[in-house]
Length: 175
Image (tube, rainbow, N blue to C red; front, top):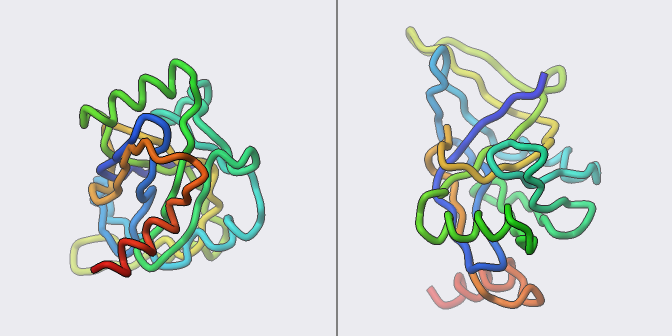
């Protein structure tokens, strides 16, 4: 069964989106339980080389990029699952850039399956808590309605030849 989770705040530059599709150790109240993503939950998916898609609002017909095509780059860091997405020159890509720029779409989501042993459940008082330890990542999605409110997306016009990861390192060196 494919599960979907959403998170919050995107930015764009008209050509490239970047941000976090998931953040570690952030709790999301999903109604009947609280869910927390733990550090390394995406490691096996990223190492497997499987093709992970970027979509708009979980719609398979709104394809924005793929890891196999090199238009979606994913990386785990100390904060969560970071991404860089080169937007296509399609109606979905152009529309999404405008919606992100306006702030209408400001979050991320992800679709996943949990392999056996990939999660842990516990009761904390009257609250049921699910920890995601290892998931099979299928997609990331740009959304206006994230479940995890601390995800981020940004739009920038930087040439695709300049790496998001290089810019992050430069920023860290100046602070």
